[in-house]
Structure formats: C-alpha cells, structure tokens
Length: 352
Image (cartoon, rainbow, N blue to C red; front, side, top):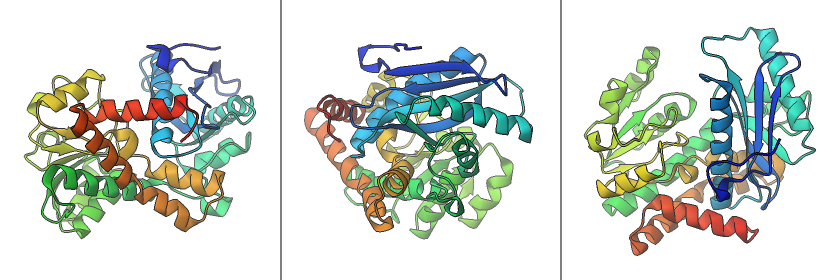
C-alpha cells in the first residue's frame, strides 16, 4: 500500500500495513525517502488508541527521519516501523518474539530498501530477534555482531548540541555556569544527567518513574514532578521523554531561555516553533539534537567506519546545530524552519 501524508513533501515511497501472521497485531512499515540511500528508522512498540494512530505516527516519524539523516550528513533516507498495541495489551515473551518476527518479515519484503533499529519499546536484543528474519536490523548487541546500545552515543550528541546552544544563547559553551531541567531519566536522559553533573551544571530532574529519583540524587539534581520540571526556572530545558511536550498550552508556562533534548517530535505542530520564537525561547530542532545514536550505529554497522570516525561524526552535531542557529538568526526565522529548509534542499539535490 502506498499512502500520502499531510502534504506533498510527506509523500512516502512505501507504506505497508499488515496484520502479523503469527501475532495478529498491526504492523506499519513506512519508507519516506531513499533519495540519499537506504532508508533507516527505529522499530517502535507502543500502545495506541487505534491502529490508525500508529499509522499516523509512522508517517510522521519516517518523514522526520529523512530530515534527520540529511542534516546529519548520512547517506540514508527516513523510515519507521510501528507495532501498534491496543490499549492495555501486554505481551508475553512468546508473543513479543512472534510480533518481532512478523515485523522482520515485512522489512525483509522490502529487499534492503529499509533497515530498522531500536526505538521506544524495543532494544538491541529485539534487533537480534528481528535479524532472524531479515539482515536489515542494526544496533544489535556487540556480542551479536552489532554496535550495541546507542543511548550513550545519543547522549554524547545531546551534550555536543547543548554546548552549541549555550554558546549561541548565552555567549559561552561552558555548561558549569548554566542550569538545566532534564525531563525523563530513561537510557538517554540518565546518561545526559550524569554527564551534566560531571560538567558541574546546576540540575533539576524528573521522571514519571519514581524509582529513578535515586539517579537524580546521585547526580546532585533537585527532584521535581514532571510538570514542575517542565516549567522550572532554568537556563535550558532538556526534554528526554516522549514527544508532543511543547504545545500552545505548555509554551506560555515555560520559564527557560532555551530548549534542547533527545526526545523526538517535541513540537505538537509546526506552528509551535513560531510560538517558542515569539516567547524568546531558543529551540534546538530535535532532529539534530537526537541524532547521535543513529549516526554512530549506521556509521559503524552500515557504512563500516571506525569507532573514531563514528564518534567524530557524533561530535559534529555541535557544528551542524551552530550553523542552523546562525542561519536562523541571520534570516530572522526559527531554527525549525532553517533546519527543514536545509534538509529539503539536500534531499531534493540527492546529497547528504
């Protein structure tokens, strides 16, 4: 099935919607673009009110992935796998294995057009299961021939972005003089918090999982509720949980001067970027900030670069973000508009 999304820029090359033959669960694989090369994107295993919501998510995320790859300088396009779980549905080990095999079969049918990696609800071990049905799965554990958990590399990319953001917004890349509110202490957010603590930053942290308060305490961060963390009076807000956090309702309540974090799709709609700009809040596009993990994994596993080469690419996020922020400032536009324009130009001209 080939489908279109919200506008002509989001027309997808392939969109497959299939009920898994083993699991009976709906699986969506969306390939947005292969103009720059093989499409890549994570496998999301998450609950949705209806499978159509999973389809919408796959279309939106795969289009964003095309922009992310272009801005990261990767010879890849964007794609996404979404396994849509009904509300309240839990998976036992056998069913989880079955649905991952179902997803692997769909990906295998694309004959290398698309490769998948971990995303919300999946991890490196799940990529091993998918790889039993297709070779086009990356971020497998090191012992399974992959590059391992990408979260640390994503966090390194976030820190590179934070240096660039602070240099642009405050005139100095020194993080020790700044305050940060880290919202979400999962695999990436936890790494970011620890690195910021090591840098001597002043920290506020929150997570919906109360058990992660121990991590905040260890890092010397003040613990807050997610709502209080979102509206904390800090220099930089670091969204590190699920997306959709920045809306027309939440932006007026923010007290930060800038925002940069690894959460994907932080804006509920593109218009929210304009609202942030109007409120004087400098927002670093998440498609740049969150790219460290995918940059490292694809460089090592798909393009056979050395660890040092891959790490250098991750640190290059700082230069990419600096260029976008300066372009936006010179044009009087939002960083979101500058990033999207740059990505579209590179995709249309067929070069990362």
